[in-house]
Length: 628
Image (cartoon, rainbow, N blue to C red; front, side):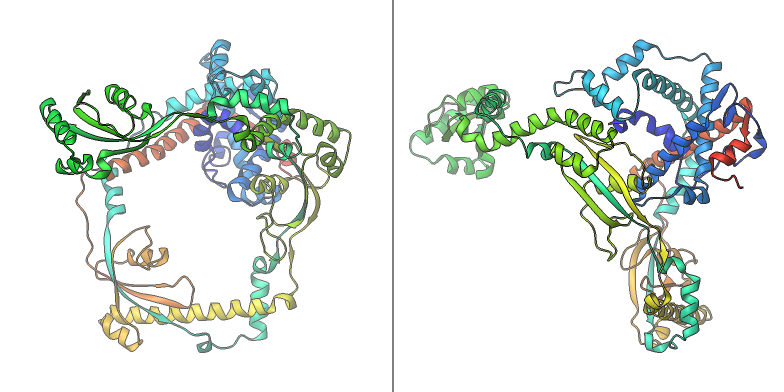
């Protein structure tokens, strides 16, 4: 729920943390702006402090974000190796710089504005669209916020957003940039090509030394991933509903509450012919009175049967009130007099009437029972959560907590970060994405917060961690042998293609070279940069666009068993129209990039202006860099 609460914050957050590894500005990109020294916190930014506790929480949150985005957990050590720790600190320093600037400018957000903003947030509205204080407090509890802490964070977020929004506002690409991008994206090429292949039998059999060298050179390919055993409990409405027994009074109350939803209004199937004038409608009515068929008359006037038939419609389905009133006043099988509607005059014939029906309790008992159970289960979710949390605080085992609370307990023995077992087969894990990313960011013995769901909770604990380990050579020898053969086949195919391209560039025809290779020349049309198609993968498209008109290029096939020899046909450069939908779309896509550039420049200048000091000793400690 906190995600929905903070949708407005995502814009500037995304701009400050672009990609997993991007640290394009800030502390580590323009180091001359900053100095290392001692301070009361991890970093001093003007009048603001960044504490070690703030960094630790932000770093852990970032690891969870990465795991959620990629579906694979990342350890703190791996994150530091990638420089993500520095990116997190940069992010915090940039936020502190914005806070300092907001303070200097005496910007503020009133309590009344915050309260009004929160009460209008869809995340906190009930089914009637009114603010639900209970839902608000539940969201805060789930995410470890007090009201005062949450409002302080929201006030800070709004002020930061005001500054960054102003800095990035008004960014618009010029016409020259739009045209260049337009031509780059829309340039088309045709290609004539053929493919040369290499069979496994054409390359030398791998030697023992080559196989061992392959194994030693690419340990990642022969390493079993980390596996974890995870204990899981979950409480969702369906879990709780399964153990609810309803009384007769429960059903009666549920029927009274939802009775209107089991009412079916009267429906009619009506034939209709419209006329431009009352006189024509009266003449048609006379024909019908003389025995003419209604649909035959409709066809004479150019209407199909489908045009003239309105099947199973309620009175509310008819837009014109005059037509609706007349249609629902007729007896079945009768034809109306001409009806003067809002837009035209019509004749109607009712051919079927389905009376209104209020379903009885007995008629709807099966589906009503499930609905009432779910209603009661929704009401019990929070009490179940509190009972589970009390039991966890008393150090009760998951198995015993689940049994007492009547909720599912699942023990996953040995899953990798993608949710596969040791045989590589998918494991059925409830809410797998959330549970896996959280579990692979935790450890054995850690008491984790429950994962909030839309209408429930999942609890998890890591029971065992089996570290990633290099498989013994004898176990993967065949795999390494196949890899050596594949590499030789790929190299041979690439070599064949390269030599053929060299000959083509020296004057040999593509058709003659294809004949020598016992291959057939094919044609692909309308290829664009960045668009795979017509049997052309990304590598082949890139190679084709890397040469001039009528030039020759080659690219290895995706399976590595062959290579494509290509000739670029005449280049088509479409004329640029600044008013075309494509040009306008490009302009809109370039705006965020320019806004990001402006925001980056603003943040760099702001940090330089306010001054930043980092406590190097504390940074080495919190970043796990301190050595003994």
